[in-house]
Image (cartoon, rainbow, N blue to C red):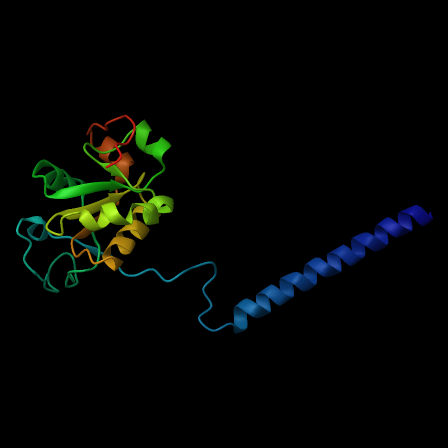
Length: 189
């Protein structure tokens, strides 16, 4: 009987600890200012109008009556569509930057893309600063959500690039549209 009594006592104590932990967590969440559960502040992303992607890039604002709803502030990343990405690549107006790992890049990437994984960003500072400020830098990853591509885009704007776009559909959207991916290892520049 003593053996079962110890197990029942341990179970009661464990249950009390779990209940106390839930109460403390709920109280913390309830009384914490700006209480948003498991979230972080993410800057608002603006979708691009086709007129923004023509060269040379004028400082165009999209009026509030447009489908995009906000003025585009040059110097902040914009989100582009599959058609807009195709245009940028076909006209050689952009450098496509794959934010995924080298292994994911080798398995399939947008035609002509360069691989720039976030974890290697600081290793390539010299190369990044040599890129033309007249070209768009279009970041992407697998597809929505494209967190790696979005973070890379904000990092690039922080380095002084004004023409940065996020290709949110990524490789999954590109393939779903019937467009081919290239395979192969990345080329170091």
